[in-house]
Image 1 (cartoon, rainbow, N blue to C red):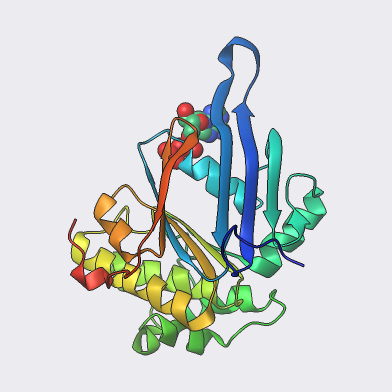
Image 2 (spheres, rainbow, N blue to C red):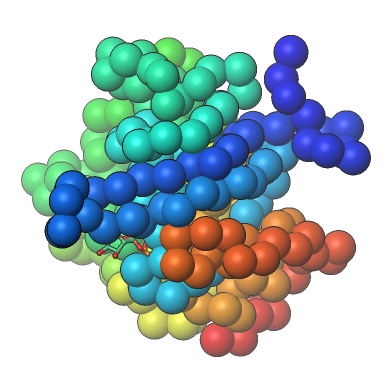
Length: 243
Ligand code: ADP
């Protein structure tokens, strides 16, 4: 049985308690996370805000199984990521997590279709690369190489690649950070569409406070802690957001 969010029947996708992460030790130790408590229900689209250095990426890396906590508890459904072995974390990332980063990390010598197909070859229950590319509005760009695509289109290929394995969660670290606002809107639209279509719990880190309006839930980090969270009763379309 998954844990449920207090006062809410929706099961929790992530259940985080007392999460701490210290980098280094002794005089040079950096406390990146100083006790984070957070519950994220399944299928929500969550926007994470906070000043640079407040711990957002560290948090995303830990819930994505790329890094491990110093102490505390991080449950993905019933799996405790803080006590998982390296092999279990690899399986977790492979089965459940789609990552999208600020820079797209596409293979320049492969077409959009081939970049997505690379991932579907190692996934358990992938959707066809063409279908994933269609989901992000790139059905007519499948045979293009990254250099023949705009920045926003390359980011949408990266989203299609993450989506193609039908992840349970999509973790996006500044996905619009390198894009102008019009292009950024299209990338956010793709992420919202994917969230609604495949139901993946979606966490998006951004430094644009205006983007908070598209979220079901907003989480604000400050100094390695969650400063506040709120729920948007009526999330806006990315097109109606200004930043
Ligand atoms: P944000 O994503 O909010 O900008 P980060 O999670 O990247 O914040 O960083 C939180 C703090 O941890 C910062 O002070 C940063 O310098 C530090 N930090 C992040 N990664 C490392 C690392 N690998 N080694 C040492 N310190 C780190």
